[in-house]
Length: 333
Ligand code: TRP
Image (cartoon, rainbow, N blue to C red):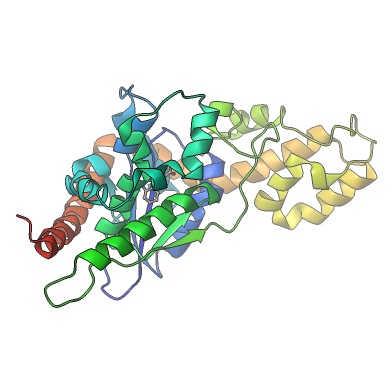
């Protein structure tokens, strides 16, 4: 691990097998950044409690998520992968940070408001209100300079910035130096990959995903149902690729063929079925190395657990050190 690289802390809640929306929206970016930055990858298992108390699958889902991360190109020797619940300092710093932000500020969080509306919640748990405070602890324990996130997570990084400044104003190292950086959000470049139904978001709960683990047949059968230009009913009809979801997938997964697809669609010579089969083949080829790597890892889940335990050892050293600095600066303990 390099001392002078900027630090990235990225994380996801473990929700099981990942889909191509996760890949395009996050993973691809993490992999691209792992040489220029020192990356840490957090499996935010405690964060899953905010929306569900059914923890039966959290362990297994964490392993599956790590498999997808590694298969997608994260090198865990360079970029440690670890579970939040295995590093006690996350909850400790969460407690300290929870004194540095007001209830009113947390209630203003637009991501939380949206979630309350979407899930139709009448009230929320105390810890759910504190979701971004735990996230701030996740980021700042490792002194993250940069947090790669989607748009919906920017408000959380803003709360992290506020907590870091507030801490820095109140507590300093004995030599007067500041403990925490003020992290920057780094918005992922490619816009969100829409779901198969054409909805803005690909999401397990909307049942509109293609998994990184899906094979060619699975991809084809899902793609058959994908949303296309509703005015193009049969081969021969002229289509508008700019409103077609399948064309968006071609842009991402079949960039060399894009001109041919556009011409075929707009002239009518290419039917939607054939167009979908083509993109399925491109996508399947694109995913092939990930699929191969993940099936090897699937055969050796205890090896994956070992990788996490190794990551946790490295993360713990840093987290313990930061917490020691925090307690010293606060003259506690
Ligand atoms: N809130 C993030 C999400 O839902 C997950 C997360 C938890 C996270 N801790 C983090 C992301 C720290 C970045 C940094 O996707």
